[in-house]
Image (cartoon, rainbow, N blue to C red):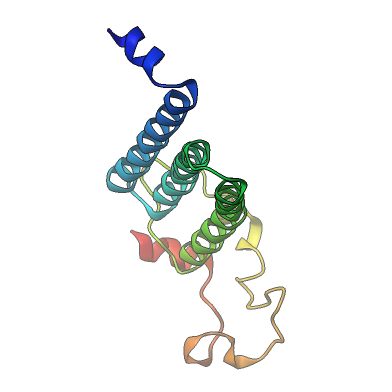
Length: 154
């Protein structure tokens, strides 16, 4: 019965259906990861990796079923845009969350920035784009060290 259904439908429809179903499964995994994971960093990992792959598979399935080169070009453009922007935006959000002192999961074993001696350039208030002025941090003072941020997480 299943073989007859595959024979009746063309191989393009079957391949497109499998791509869309696989993409939907990856999107579901991303959504579950957003709910289940403990901290913002793990949630970003789940949503970026699985979400991008899921959307890419769905767009590939759509490109197979839609007629014309224009539709395939649009789908390829969407996938390229996702592959370029998702990792960059996840990195920026994760860095901002870390510097703001976001709570790490208890399952996080290593905090590499905390392990650095002196906790890097933010400890003494001299970041790569820092001009040394007093107006760099809210309130006019130097930004807190990562040790202070770690104390705030607990």
